[in-house]
Image (cartoon, rainbow, N blue to C red; front, side, top):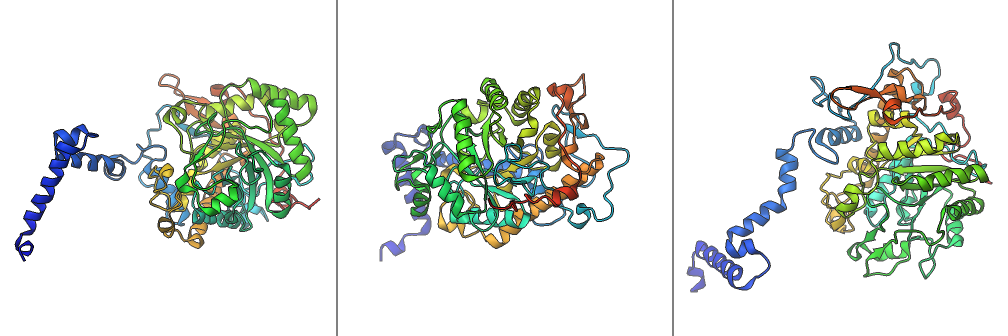
Length: 516
């Protein structure tokens, strides 16, 4: 009866008084809340929502990193098949350092007759065949030049993985599993590149060592696996092993990865299956021999000496990787300490150009399918990558954005608000894989269509025909622009190409290779 007579505002004052007493006399962690009781909590609240406030109300359209509002908007609109055009001219500073230009032809390329681009405006396969040079039993020509990069189930949610895999099947692209193993959500029929990381998840024995028998059995049981990628390092944290927090490990993930519940899963920084470059080549050849699949490597680029050793051994032995995925040091979906993400390994353009020159100097670029990975999921950036020697690109964060990621940058906390990078069931429920797979597919189709249009504007039929002289880049204020060959001191070697129709007729297109 007495309590009911107390006014609501008196309860508020009592609550604030209790908070003030706690702040001053009991808590010792925070100086601000001790010195400024009650009010200090407002500071922590504003700090916690600061990134969102800046993202939506403060930052301009071109200011944010890693993807600014214009870039995110283009992906969202493309994925939803909405208007992704800009009006009233570009708002980008086209005189800024590193801004690039595609040199258009006076007369664009014009497809005629029964040209594949007239029948399917997004048909754009890779101009090279993985495993062709090394005579693998099951060569593979990717049916799309844009594909989903390595992201593991566990880091990403089940529904996100399901959406990506169903999307690549619709788009005719491939899906890299990441090092977390093959899950049921990779098994919707889309082409798969299975990644072998340092933890050997899904193909490890009870002691965590690599098991060739398990890998061979996995490939035989899942014919949609079209290639194997050995991850040497990744752009987010090259030379450092990954960590999957215990909070993200469910019974399902434990079973798929063959790891215990309740403990952080740590990938070692280096492989135990081989210790040097000759050992790497032997590892590649053993896997290729027993599976029949093309085998490649993925790495972020820093020191170049070991790549030179690899190239020299490839010449001496006639063996080696069928493809090389170059990851940019800009970092990607993997969580990493700032010291690694900000400073270890080269950004993509520097790393790729250094690596490509190693193989160009030895005249063996034709043996390898070069795959670029590092914020290349935009047609103009892809044109630059192809001009430098890339044959395909992989996208990770762009793919995540297409299925609903909002760049909250909390992937490492298990609290992703869009449900993409979390194992929280409630948050995942916001993802409809049927809808999101269509959006991933539509983003890929829109990208390919616009990339073809940019290619035709430059006078070419396929982007593999881009040369370093087709792209200009701002290098400084005095020497305003320079062609890529002058900037990076090499000229890309020509890619053998006859016609898009020949690519369409290839028996290895999209994994349609005869089974040996």
